[in-house]
Image (spheres, one colour):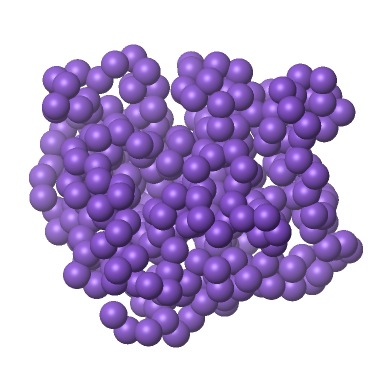
Length: 373
């Protein structure tokens, strides 16, 4: 593999951002419900909420730009770099199959290269009658054997092809495509193929090829390339790109939204925003050092880098929820620079590591509202 030439921390230059709207004529109807302050949740926490190092004082957009560049450079040094000289050039995609899902709704399975010599597959879902410049969303699957099949409403063939009601609520790509979005659902690198997960084995192979990189560097790189691929799909509006994911997929959303300003609105469901809240120490994520005392980074820094773009955390008090509030509160000053603090929120359904109907409904409304601009 060629040595890395550019840092993810320089994405602001490498991938020019779309113009960012700071206010909207319309917000989600339940906006007040997700503007949570720490005092409101202190009594409901099962343990003391974390105290996080504040982000630097920001008094202007120039301050924020410098903060974002420094922060992403620092995180990239920890993650390790990939060569992004081909960013914005879509990968060559081979169409493996095309199927009609509903009347007028097509599902295409495509294959393309990410890391040299490494190929992934993805589903593209879109209506045939969409107008030009339609909104589009990258959809990341959770940790299930059938990977991208979950995103488009297909079951695990090892358990019979019929998905459960719970799995259908996680089929974000299918729900969004039926509502006029173009969706792109890429397979995470930890899967050998679309119905076989081998996190330990695939992470070990990746790290043996890339000793200077963390597993999350590969996920971030693949996510960026997924956006490149999505933007090559006919009819996609490059100014209305979103991202959504549950659990594992929520982690990918956090990093992608922080590093790639082409993501205009995003939803991260039950990923565990704080490093202490989930298994971020796994080799396929950040590795053991992230849980050592004195580790100088945490994810409120990345949340702040998303400002002023709308970012919704959904929790059920399993990976995200009450304990996520300090992370959003710590990132809030970055949103205040743009008078966009309403664009950062937490919806806690309190039903564990699941996607209940209320979560699905709010995910769709968040993306419809903030990608309609």
